[in-house]
Length: 254
Image (cartoon, rainbow, N blue to C red; front, side, top):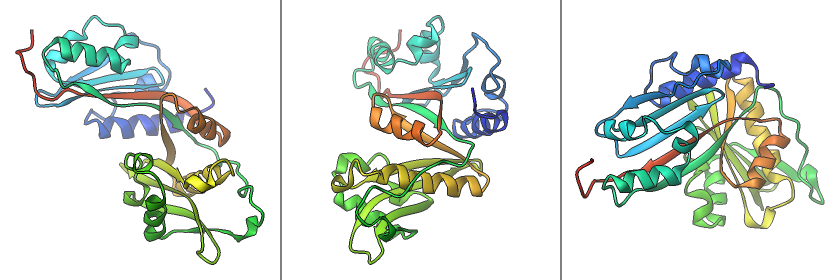
């Protein structure tokens, strides 16, 4: 893959810490060392199961009974949230449901992007105001922003008209462990298909790179528009993360 070893190592360290794993847990696999081994970590009180695949590294974070149930399952099945839900329900967790199924994209070079395709592109400026990000969220359907919620993140960038008469798109990132910039993007319904998403994501990614961070996009599986946006900016598909809610069992695990 084109992504540098340094960026893969940084991402592996950030994910290890986010998941509560030892720092070197994912390093070898992220460096491309092929292995059939899937790191499994027991969390007895966990109410969810999370499966991460990063380059050749993989990890399953779940209660012990769930890990034991997955012991002989191939990685392709553990990565499938529908199969994980079926397994949880088989063990009495009737409320099990998919929380998320995302592709992980990483970037380690300055993205190439242009001004949005509007009549007066020179009027497009970038606001760093959290209030502008919040205002744009209010323009969007709740389902669009509840998950990404840019205004709640550490750093915001919003494409606005120079006289603040229009808000077009916003992108923001959280800093993971001082290593990775986890980026979210949101475009107003009226501004779709004009290049505003690519523009503001490129701004956020470039800012993250200038701060020595590795930009990351997590994109819902099947969201072809978001995947195309990521790839157009030079992000590279580097893995996936799946999370399933388990809830409380109605029957004892068998």
